[in-house]
Length: 250
Ligand code: 1GP
View 1: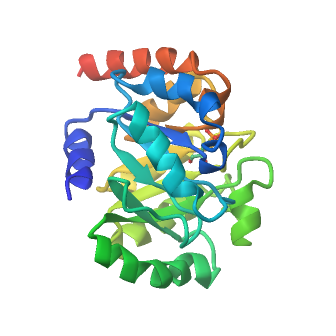
View 2: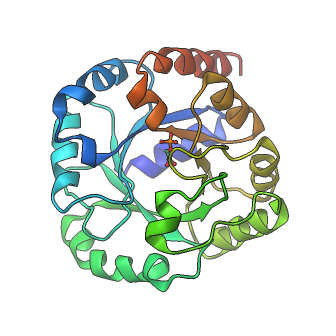
C-alpha cells in the first residue's frame, strides 16, 4: 500500500499533483486514447484515474489494461458503481458521497465491493466525495440521485469536508461534475483547505490551464482533468508547465 503515503508525502512538502481522468467507456476505442496516454508517459502526470458514472460491466478492467500498455503511471480507480473495480489497478478511491443522502452511495456499493477488495488486497483509500453545484445537472447527480451542495454555501461545504475527516476519511474530493460549466471556485477550495489536514482533490470543469492554476493556488493538492484533455491532449503540456513552475519555486 504505497499510493496514499505518496500523496501525503507530496502534500506535506506542498507539491502540487495532477491526475488525468480516463472514462472507461471510451477505452474500447483504444485509438482515441493513445495520443493522450503517450503524452502522459514521462510527463509529470502523477496519477491516472479511471472511472465514470455510467460504465458497462467489464469496461473498467479493459481500460486499465489499455492504460498499462502505454504508461507506468499509477492507476487509481474512481468508481461510480461496485462493479467498476479491477485487480489490475494500483489503488482504489473508496468514495463515499457525503454531500448526498442516498445510502447506496454512502455505504451500499461499498458493502458489495468489500469482500472482493479484501481478497485482492487492493489498496483502498477512504475518500469523502462532495458534489458541488457546477451550473448544470451532471451525470454524478443524476446517477446518484442526490442534490449537489449549493456553491454559495462554502461553510456547509467546509463542514461536510471536516465531518468526512472526523469520520476517518483519508482524502476529500470536491467534485463539480464532469463537464461542469463552473469548476469549484477558489473561495470554496480555500475555505475547505483551511479546515482540513488531509489532502484535498478538486475536479470537474477544469478545462483551461488558468483554471488549473487557480485551483492549485487556492489550496487543491491534486486536481483532476478529464474531458478537456481527451478533447485537446496538447493542453496537458501547458498544465504541466504550471505545475512544474509551482513545484520548482517552493
Ligand atoms: C473529475 O469528474 C471530473 O473530478 C472530471 O471532470 O471531465 O470536467 O474534467 P472533467
